[in-house]
Every structure is written in C-alpha cells, then in structure tokens.
Length: 173
Image (cartoon, rainbow, N blue to C red; front, side):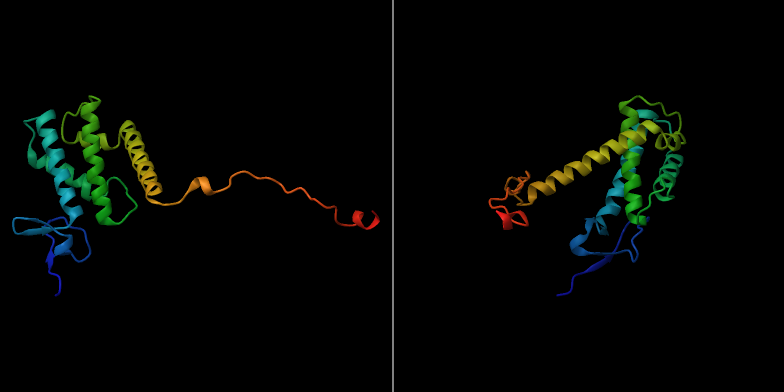
C-alpha cells in the first residue's frame, strides 16, 4: 500500500516540495510537519519565551518575533549549507545565544539587541566549542560502534636482519 504524503504545516517550510511522508512526519492535531520544521518552530517559541520571562515582560511580541524571524530565515548567519539546514542551524544558534546571554549576564535592552548578540565574539567562540565537542562525541560514538580491534594492528617497526649474507660479498666467501 502506498504511504500517505502530506503538505508540511509549517509556514516557513523551506523543503523543495513541502511534502512530508506520514512515516517521517510529526503530527500536531490535524497538521503534519517535517521534524526539522517542528524543531525550528519550537526553538523560535523557546527564544521568545526566554526573552519574555527573563529579559522583558513588556516587550512588543510582534517586534520580537520579527527580529527572531529575520535572524533565522534571512540568512543573517551566513551559513553555507542548504536552506532548510541553514534555518535549523540558525534557530539552534539563536537559542544557544539566548541561553549563553542569560548564563553570562549579557544585557539585552531590546529585541534589536539580538542582532548584536548573535555577532558577539564570545558567543561565537562558545558555539564553536560546543560544536567541536558534539563532533568529538559523535566520532567517539562511531568508533565504539565499529568492531575494529586497534590492539590487533601492529604499530611498531622491527627491521629484518639478514641471516645469510647475500650479494657480491657472498661469492668470495
């Protein structure tokens, strides 16, 4: 039987044809979403919630959402990957930057301060460290999954010593 295909329920879906198979979809009420589209939406909601709860409860939510959407969808982070991966990475970075700002007590006076936050050198360095740790963890996990025995590989070099002299000297004696 042919698998059902739905249109992604996310307004900013950046997949080519916006179709999502039922087995790959996340269903919320009667809408079906790509997994990465759902994660982007959840990250955006969480950034807005963090801003509202921890920075300013008098913020104009329309302006905050506009700034967040510009950061995530307008390629302000200059990612050199596919559009849908770029949006997902941008939403993850923005969420990380917000959490980092709270942790390190970086002041934000308005939603426009998010533009400066994502360009902050300390935030970028912390993000690079986090990504390096993730890559290292993934590499170690892949090595654990492999059944390759590193102890079986001979790592030392022992030159062979000739037992019998051969060549021109062996002719005479």
